[in-house]
Image (tube, rainbow, N blue to C red):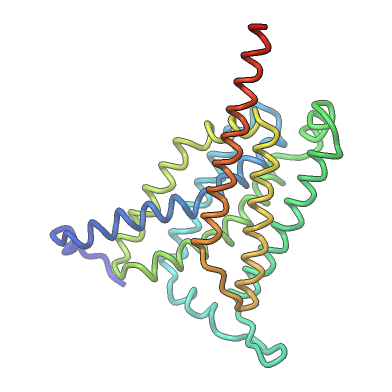
Length: 247
């Protein structure tokens, strides 16, 4: 794929750019959640920097994959066979990434529920290094980027549209990542809900690696409905606090 600006005069290309950008933002939500949760383990003065670097790493990973489409295509070629099913490099990456997400989310939920309180969280923040957080973010960026790039390749043919859509999506995520992180940190139940999303995404990745296709629409509908219910719960609790303070 070579760069060409002929698409600028094509209205359908602009529609494709807008649609792909929205999809890339939606696909990046799970990335934001993961980065926010990992960054929250660091001292407060390092969290913003970790989130920004994490998203910039995601941008670099996506663009490198877009410029290496031939390599990406080779990842779908079977490397070996298990029970008459071919296992490709993409399957291995998605499977290992999914298992990592399942394990990481389970540990985080356990710490949140069983670890108890502010003191435990403060101790955790001093026990994890900035470098280890970035390494974990980078590994999952690769997994999430493969999904993102495959979506882009399936929608449009112009490489420049893919690159522009990815850049715009990451810029939008950079604008909102701090607000999302602050909201998640303020509401412990939202953090547990976000971790449950990671469990669901991890299970989806493992399923994809085993060639069990789960339509993304079902996943995002379940996530959106859960968020709606949680927002209602938060609103009810806020109203109850106001009523109690007046009483």
